[in-house]
Amino acid sequence: MTILDVNQILERLPHRYPFLLVDRVTEIEVGKWIKCYKNVTYNEPFFTGHFPQKPVMPGVLIIEAMAQATGLLAYETVEEKPSKESIYYFVSADKVKFKQPVGPGDKLELYAELLRVKKGMWKFDCNASVDGKVVASGEIMCVSKDS
Image (cartoon, rainbow, N blue to C red; front, side):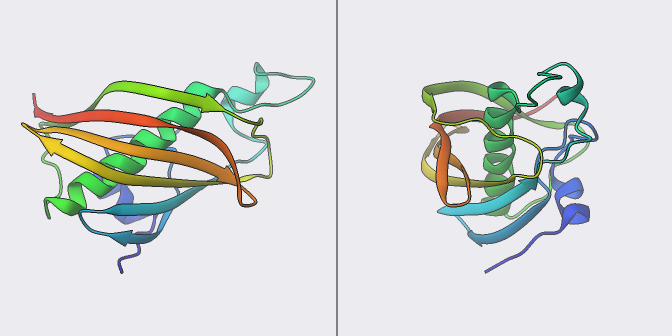
């Protein structure tokens, strides 16, 4: 079992504030699955416009958080940190469903399971939950490329 803190995450993902959406990896089985989380705070920049009267984390950012989790699993699986020229691209999201809103104070727990890797294309089954209840799910495909 490996646990990654935010500094180790920053070594593996190119994302930075305000777009880094994974705070900590809590569990990982390399080549199989990953569990991590994002603490959603009232200070998130998207809450000022989405929505001022009832802050809701945009669904596309929940999908992005799940995709960032897949990137961490992929890099741990190949046992390398990405080079400065390497980018992990989001390719597609299928069967995406949202079940309830996510707001300030929620701990967004992310889970990604590797379904397959073929010719550099990674496919994952993902879900996001709050307090043990799934708030979003879907299949995500990504590819790692050197620019």
